[in-house]
Image (cartoon, rainbow, N blue to C red; front, side, top):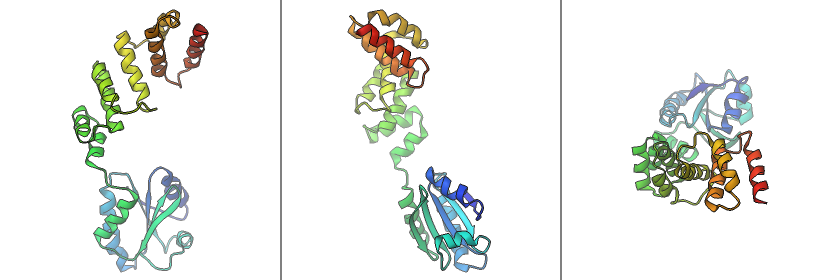
Length: 234
């Protein structure tokens, strides 16, 4: 992504944006010969990053406040901004390999596994896990696809490769609950059925807890069902 930034838009287009996405600030001017050789290189390298980094171009003649803020004495000058802080910079025109190294330090190139996970389809995720068997993101994504297709056992086999976490716990709970109850579209109806059994039936209790994970912390009735479980048990 390439944007032109002014004194008026710097706060929102650079500082605020840098909280979520790294921003490379290119300080240039129309009369600057080295700027004209550097800017196309920046545009090319950043364009290859697929939106994971933003190039913010600043004409210093038109925007003196930004030039003052960076205390720039000569151009071209390039600054990397992450979370509203300057994390790296360089001055003067540089060859492409130097620019590429600079950008890669701010936004490392995606690994082959990351690219496969980003693709997100079942075949790509399986291939990613052949390369990195314990990649949590690939496991979580593939397990979700498998559960949607009714392959709960296989999903649980993949999930067993990694320690349970905030990412994998609700997915594993959904797989276990689906395996135990079949169609769990109506989670609360199933909770109602299980509630009288939870004190004396260990399997029912485990399924009930899994269904609470499936329901999720943001559901308005999750707290109520947790209280009902506590009352039934104690």
